[in-house]
Length: 371
Image (cartoon, rainbow, N blue to C red; front, side):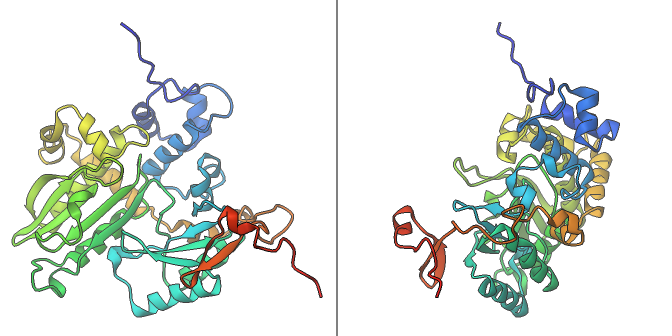
């Protein structure tokens, strides 16, 4: 037969799963150490650097702004913002469970107005601010953090959002406090790096207003506790999440999610969503239940301990960067000039600015007239 090379890249003759095990077992915390021990070449490449950077973050949760980790990140992670089609960036503060105070809304509005950012409510119950230039990001985040916000990690392969309905607090159909559970879940797993993005949702009853059955981790309230659904997603190839366990109390629910997420992080391929990982899992859902619920491999305590380390080391990456002038030096469009890019142009539409289309650029003066 034909041999199949499963090497991550030319620098590592191992799969992502094998590299994860090496990092975890040997306590490796830098790319250079991993390359020296188990790789070849001197620098790595655009394939292995982000993959190893993700593994290191999943294992040890050190700030990606550290000098040894920055070179491993792609553009979005490097600048902790999503680059848009015109070279500007979006800013997404975390809004846990979609719950926000009037003061929080006013603070976001004030920042958006000050920096003339396009604002949009996202499908994950957050507010996305578009159109920030690179040099503006530290100032924008300084004001957002002062107002009590944290990074939403919209730029990373990590926990994104925990969507929720209002649950039993307000809704006459709600049977559990879905907002409180969503807040607990998001607070625990925020900043968790994984092979691909992670989306969660919590619904307060079977009417499913939070659409939990389309998420990587979905939680639906019952009269007796919580039903847990796993490995769903939307996107180009939607997959319905599968019912994994029923009528769980709060603590058991969190333990099962801990185990599930760390098992996924340990065994998935690079850039593999939970849905695709689940479909490739030998033994299917029954195997997953045996490992997570019955602890058939004796890994439960280890997986929970690994998750707790990640939780305990959490730090807002933007708050970390703002404390260090050296880390802020890369937030410049030009090395020798603190100004923005003069070739970025916007036009007004529906009372907000958006990137100018190519045919609209001819209508924009190239130079301002000096009087």
